[in-house]
Length: 245
Image (cartoon, rainbow, N blue to C red; front, side):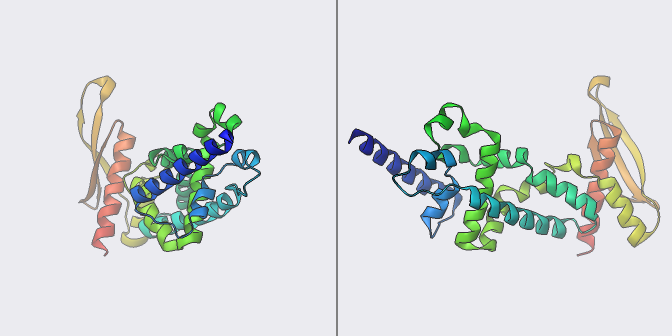
């Protein structure tokens, strides 16, 4: 009897946490069981066989595909001069396990996961692979419950701003993109010039500009000449994108 009461209290507490989560996210699931399933690990299902529970593995499978499509669509629209190879590389960086873990942690997904006792005791709640799976499963659940537009609205809050802010710029070769764009649309070759070097030798900052036929396209700063050139090329691409609208 005590065990049943304990499980009942735990279930009520979790229901309240899921309600608070939806309030915080500004999302209201029509089917609450789908939301709960997204956060249910197989270890929890194995320990609660008297009640019918489904783990999140099928939702994870679906969410993986939905995430690939929505991120691909965002990148395709946002970076019109980026080559297929660059788009593929950037998408891989956005949907890889470490990135998904970062997204899940920022949204505090870990505290909502339903785990078996053994998995809980071995730190499963913070295990990277488990958190990444939960993020994908949540995407799958949201897609089934509300469709693609709701998934995109969620990603516009949780993921896309990070891409736009340059969180994945380490895998983006803006200089190559600019070179390809200029050769295709404008003819000629971009030229880079260091405008200024600041700071001591161990902590230098370089300010660089990129120009085409004497017209300045963009400027950028970085800890190395190479990094500054990348940021200058990125600004140039953004400026040209604005001008073409």
